[in-house]
Image (cartoon, rainbow, N blue to C red):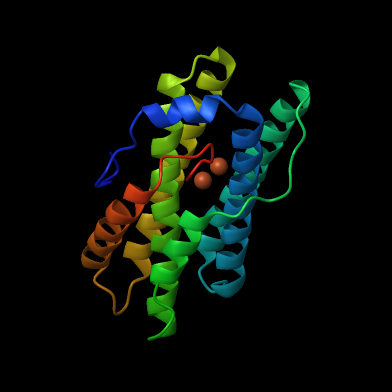
Length: 193
Ligand SMILES: [Fe+2]
Ligand SMILES: [Fe+2]
């Protein structure tokens, strides 16, 4: 799925559904961080008009996802907790290239975003197929489709704007790295946990 090297064990969904308040809180902040990431890509690469246009739409969509999650939290009588740390995303950030040319860092930032969208999409699929809660199963199915589109957008911009990066080669390195990294996860009620 989306080139991912390792699919999530569906039993992770059982862990997730034992604590819906926690997974929803973590999920809400994932959406907020996705919006922030799109905004910072816009801020740092504003010379690309089409990127500004499409990432503005993504930033808005991610905040709409945030709103949908906090609406569910409220409707169920839960409380949105403080932002949760995302160790998985921090590890990906460490893998991304910050040295080299400005373009190299830009392309890797797009691949970083594509990677998170791909795994989030896969985790949403696992939730949609395995949790008993019908409302949430449908909700996660819809989000899975949306995040798959974001994945494609980020990857396409990396291919479009590369100057000195072999994007297909670098994307393979990302998939290899992530495939090993994700082996340590799948044990917590967090979207990337
Ligand atoms: Fe989203
Ligand atoms: Fe997304």
